[in-house]
Length: 253
Image (cartoon, rainbow, N blue to C red; front, side, top):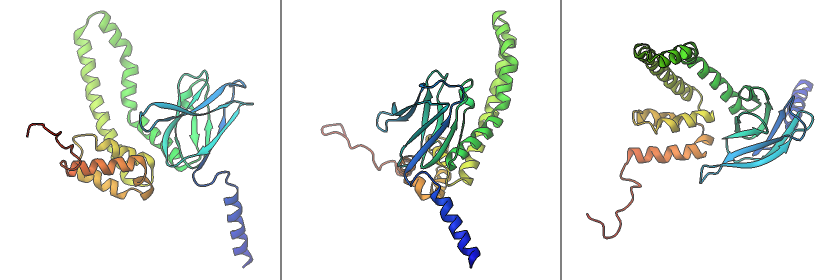
Protein backbone atom coordinates (compact mmCIF):
# COMPACT_ATOMS: atom_id res chain seq x y z
CA UNK A 1 0.00 0.00 0.00
CA UNK A 2 2.85 2.36 0.92
CA UNK A 3 4.51 1.57 -2.43
CA UNK A 4 1.33 2.49 -4.35
CA UNK A 5 0.98 5.75 -2.42
CA UNK A 6 4.64 6.56 -3.13
CA UNK A 7 4.16 5.98 -6.86
CA UNK A 8 1.04 8.15 -6.91
CA UNK A 9 2.82 10.91 -5.03
CA UNK A 10 5.77 10.71 -7.42
CA UNK A 11 3.44 10.92 -10.44
CA UNK A 12 1.72 14.01 -9.05
CA UNK A 13 5.12 15.60 -8.38
CA UNK A 14 6.23 14.98 -11.98
CA UNK A 15 3.03 16.45 -13.40
CA UNK A 16 3.21 19.50 -11.13
CA UNK A 17 6.76 20.21 -12.37
CA UNK A 18 5.41 21.19 -15.77
CA UNK A 19 5.61 24.95 -16.30
CA UNK A 20 2.80 25.07 -18.86
CA UNK A 21 -0.87 24.18 -19.01
CA UNK A 22 -2.78 22.73 -21.94
CA UNK A 23 -2.83 25.27 -24.74
CA UNK A 24 0.29 27.04 -23.51
CA UNK A 25 3.90 26.97 -24.67
CA UNK A 26 7.21 27.90 -23.11
CA UNK A 27 10.31 28.33 -25.27
CA UNK A 28 13.50 28.20 -23.24
CA UNK A 29 16.53 29.19 -25.26
CA UNK A 30 20.29 29.03 -24.84
CA UNK A 31 22.15 31.55 -26.98
CA UNK A 32 25.79 31.13 -25.98
CA UNK A 33 28.05 33.78 -27.48
CA UNK A 34 25.22 36.13 -28.42
CA UNK A 35 25.50 39.57 -26.84
CA UNK A 36 23.10 40.83 -24.21
CA UNK A 37 20.33 42.89 -25.74
CA UNK A 38 20.25 41.09 -29.09
CA UNK A 39 16.65 40.40 -30.09
CA UNK A 40 14.93 37.08 -30.74
CA UNK A 41 11.71 37.37 -32.75
CA UNK A 42 9.04 34.67 -32.78
CA UNK A 43 7.55 34.72 -36.26
CA UNK A 44 4.39 33.02 -37.48
CA UNK A 45 2.16 33.21 -40.53
CA UNK A 46 -1.00 35.20 -41.06
CA UNK A 47 -3.72 32.60 -41.76
CA UNK A 48 -5.36 34.80 -44.40
CA UNK A 49 -2.50 36.43 -46.29
CA UNK A 50 0.09 33.68 -45.53
CA UNK A 51 2.57 36.47 -44.90
CA UNK A 52 5.11 36.28 -42.07
CA UNK A 53 4.09 38.14 -38.91
CA UNK A 54 6.02 38.87 -35.72
CA UNK A 55 4.26 37.43 -32.68
CA UNK A 56 6.69 38.23 -29.90
CA UNK A 57 10.11 39.78 -29.35
CA UNK A 58 12.49 39.16 -26.44
CA UNK A 59 16.10 40.03 -25.67
CA UNK A 60 19.03 37.78 -24.86
CA UNK A 61 20.22 38.07 -21.27
CA UNK A 62 23.36 36.25 -20.17
CA UNK A 63 23.10 33.84 -23.06
CA UNK A 64 19.48 32.93 -22.32
CA UNK A 65 16.00 33.88 -23.52
CA UNK A 66 12.43 32.81 -22.83
CA UNK A 67 9.19 33.18 -24.76
CA UNK A 68 5.80 32.03 -23.52
CA UNK A 69 2.23 32.29 -24.69
CA UNK A 70 -0.82 30.40 -25.86
CA UNK A 71 -1.27 28.20 -28.93
CA UNK A 72 -4.37 26.54 -30.39
CA UNK A 73 -2.75 23.87 -32.57
CA UNK A 74 0.68 22.82 -33.88
CA UNK A 75 2.06 24.99 -36.68
CA UNK A 76 5.44 25.81 -38.15
CA UNK A 77 7.03 29.00 -36.82
CA UNK A 78 10.51 30.49 -36.91
CA UNK A 79 12.85 32.23 -34.52
CA UNK A 80 14.75 35.17 -36.00
CA UNK A 81 17.99 35.85 -34.15
CA UNK A 82 19.36 39.37 -34.62
CA UNK A 83 22.52 39.20 -36.71
CA UNK A 84 22.10 35.51 -37.63
CA UNK A 85 22.30 34.34 -41.25
CA UNK A 86 18.91 32.67 -41.32
CA UNK A 87 15.80 31.66 -39.35
CA UNK A 88 15.38 28.71 -36.98
CA UNK A 89 12.29 26.69 -38.04
CA UNK A 90 10.35 24.69 -35.44
CA UNK A 91 6.83 23.57 -34.58
CA UNK A 92 5.05 25.77 -32.05
CA UNK A 93 2.77 23.61 -29.90
CA UNK A 94 1.66 23.02 -26.33
CA UNK A 95 4.57 22.16 -24.08
CA UNK A 96 8.08 23.14 -23.07
CA UNK A 97 10.28 23.68 -26.11
CA UNK A 98 14.05 23.89 -25.74
CA UNK A 99 16.17 25.79 -28.26
CA UNK A 100 19.97 25.79 -28.44
CA UNK A 101 21.11 28.48 -30.85
CA UNK A 102 24.27 27.89 -32.91
CA UNK A 103 25.30 31.46 -33.70
CA UNK A 104 27.95 30.43 -36.25
CA UNK A 105 25.81 27.94 -38.19
CA UNK A 106 22.21 28.85 -37.46
CA UNK A 107 20.90 25.81 -39.39
CA UNK A 108 22.65 23.60 -36.82
CA UNK A 109 20.61 25.04 -33.96
CA UNK A 110 18.81 22.35 -31.96
CA UNK A 111 15.12 22.12 -31.08
CA UNK A 112 13.70 19.57 -28.63
CA UNK A 113 11.26 19.02 -25.79
CA UNK A 114 7.92 18.28 -27.44
CA UNK A 115 6.72 15.30 -29.48
CA UNK A 116 6.35 17.07 -32.81
CA UNK A 117 9.67 18.90 -32.57
CA UNK A 118 11.52 15.71 -31.65
CA UNK A 119 9.85 13.99 -34.61
CA UNK A 120 10.70 16.92 -36.90
CA UNK A 121 14.38 16.61 -35.98
CA UNK A 122 14.44 12.85 -36.59
CA UNK A 123 12.52 13.24 -39.85
CA UNK A 124 14.97 15.85 -41.13
CA UNK A 125 17.94 13.68 -40.20
CA UNK A 126 16.45 10.76 -42.12
CA UNK A 127 15.71 12.89 -45.17
CA UNK A 128 19.23 14.35 -45.10
CA UNK A 129 20.62 10.82 -45.34
CA UNK A 130 18.27 10.05 -48.23
CA UNK A 131 19.40 13.14 -50.15
CA UNK A 132 23.10 12.83 -49.27
CA UNK A 133 24.07 11.23 -52.59
CA UNK A 134 22.74 14.25 -54.49
CA UNK A 135 24.55 16.72 -52.22
CA UNK A 136 27.77 14.71 -52.52
CA UNK A 137 27.52 14.69 -56.32
CA UNK A 138 27.10 18.48 -56.38
CA UNK A 139 30.11 19.02 -54.11
CA UNK A 140 32.26 16.63 -56.10
CA UNK A 141 31.41 18.03 -59.52
CA UNK A 142 30.83 21.77 -59.00
CA UNK A 143 34.38 22.71 -59.96
CA UNK A 144 34.37 20.29 -62.88
CA UNK A 145 31.14 21.83 -64.19
CA UNK A 146 32.51 25.38 -63.85
CA UNK A 147 35.66 24.44 -65.77
CA UNK A 148 33.59 22.76 -68.50
CA UNK A 149 31.38 25.85 -68.81
CA UNK A 150 34.41 28.13 -69.11
CA UNK A 151 35.90 25.86 -71.78
CA UNK A 152 32.49 25.46 -73.46
CA UNK A 153 32.98 21.70 -73.19
CA UNK A 154 29.40 20.67 -74.04
CA UNK A 155 30.18 16.94 -73.89
CA UNK A 156 31.27 17.19 -70.24
CA UNK A 157 28.43 19.56 -69.37
CA UNK A 158 25.80 17.28 -70.90
CA UNK A 159 27.36 14.22 -69.27
CA UNK A 160 27.30 15.77 -65.82
CA UNK A 161 23.75 17.05 -66.30
CA UNK A 162 22.57 13.60 -67.36
CA UNK A 163 24.17 11.98 -64.30
CA UNK A 164 22.67 14.66 -62.05
CA UNK A 165 19.16 14.28 -63.48
CA UNK A 166 19.29 10.49 -63.11
CA UNK A 167 20.45 10.80 -59.51
CA UNK A 168 17.87 13.50 -58.80
CA UNK A 169 15.02 11.29 -60.07
CA UNK A 170 16.24 8.43 -57.88
CA UNK A 171 16.47 10.66 -54.81
CA UNK A 172 12.99 12.11 -55.43
CA UNK A 173 11.48 8.63 -55.70
CA UNK A 174 13.21 7.50 -52.50
CA UNK A 175 12.09 10.68 -50.74
CA UNK A 176 8.47 10.07 -51.75
CA UNK A 177 8.69 6.55 -50.33
CA UNK A 178 10.10 7.95 -47.09
CA UNK A 179 7.29 10.51 -46.85
CA UNK A 180 4.66 7.85 -47.41
CA UNK A 181 6.21 5.42 -44.92
CA UNK A 182 6.40 8.15 -42.30
CA UNK A 183 2.75 9.17 -42.71
CA UNK A 184 1.70 5.50 -42.51
CA UNK A 185 3.56 4.92 -39.24
CA UNK A 186 3.11 8.27 -37.45
CA UNK A 187 -0.64 9.07 -37.28
CA UNK A 188 -0.11 11.48 -34.36
CA UNK A 189 2.68 13.52 -35.95
CA UNK A 190 1.94 16.98 -37.34
CA UNK A 191 4.39 16.27 -40.18
CA UNK A 192 2.13 13.43 -41.36
CA UNK A 193 -0.72 15.89 -41.92
CA UNK A 194 1.60 18.11 -43.96
CA UNK A 195 2.75 15.12 -46.01
CA UNK A 196 -0.84 14.15 -46.84
CA UNK A 197 -1.61 17.79 -47.62
CA UNK A 198 1.27 17.77 -50.10
CA UNK A 199 0.15 14.44 -51.56
CA UNK A 200 -3.32 15.66 -52.51
CA UNK A 201 -1.77 18.54 -54.46
CA UNK A 202 0.08 16.04 -56.64
CA UNK A 203 -2.05 14.95 -59.65
CA UNK A 204 -0.36 11.53 -59.67
CA UNK A 205 -1.43 10.73 -56.09
CA UNK A 206 -3.63 7.70 -55.41
CA UNK A 207 -6.68 9.40 -53.86
CA UNK A 208 -7.79 6.26 -52.03
CA UNK A 209 -4.33 5.99 -50.48
CA UNK A 210 -4.40 9.63 -49.39
CA UNK A 211 -7.88 9.21 -47.97
CA UNK A 212 -6.79 6.13 -46.03
CA UNK A 213 -3.87 8.02 -44.54
CA UNK A 214 -6.16 10.91 -43.60
CA UNK A 215 -8.65 8.55 -41.93
CA UNK A 216 -5.86 7.05 -39.83
CA UNK A 217 -4.76 10.44 -38.48
CA UNK A 218 -5.30 11.27 -34.83
CA UNK A 219 -8.50 13.26 -34.28
CA UNK A 220 -6.55 16.28 -33.08
CA UNK A 221 -4.80 16.44 -36.47
CA UNK A 222 -8.05 16.00 -38.38
CA UNK A 223 -9.36 19.04 -36.52
CA UNK A 224 -6.23 21.10 -37.25
CA UNK A 225 -6.02 23.61 -40.11
CA UNK A 226 -4.10 21.19 -42.41
CA UNK A 227 -6.51 18.39 -41.47
CA UNK A 228 -9.56 20.47 -42.39
CA UNK A 229 -7.97 21.50 -45.68
CA UNK A 230 -7.23 17.86 -46.51
CA UNK A 231 -10.82 16.84 -45.79
CA UNK A 232 -12.18 19.64 -48.00
CA UNK A 233 -9.80 18.85 -50.85
CA UNK A 234 -10.53 15.11 -50.70
CA UNK A 235 -14.24 15.88 -50.88
CA UNK A 236 -13.70 18.08 -53.95
CA UNK A 237 -11.55 15.45 -55.65
CA UNK A 238 -14.11 12.71 -55.05
CA UNK A 239 -17.05 14.92 -56.06
CA UNK A 240 -15.74 17.58 -58.48
CA UNK A 241 -19.23 19.07 -58.93
CA UNK A 242 -19.57 19.80 -55.21
CA UNK A 243 -18.42 23.29 -54.38
CA UNK A 244 -18.14 24.33 -58.03
CA UNK A 245 -19.09 27.96 -58.42
CA UNK A 246 -22.43 28.60 -60.03
CA UNK A 247 -22.51 30.33 -63.42
CA UNK A 248 -23.17 34.07 -63.07
CA UNK A 249 -26.59 35.43 -64.05
CA UNK A 250 -26.78 36.08 -67.75
CA UNK A 251 -23.81 33.87 -68.63
CA UNK A 252 -24.05 31.51 -71.61
CA UNK A 253 -25.47 28.07 -70.88
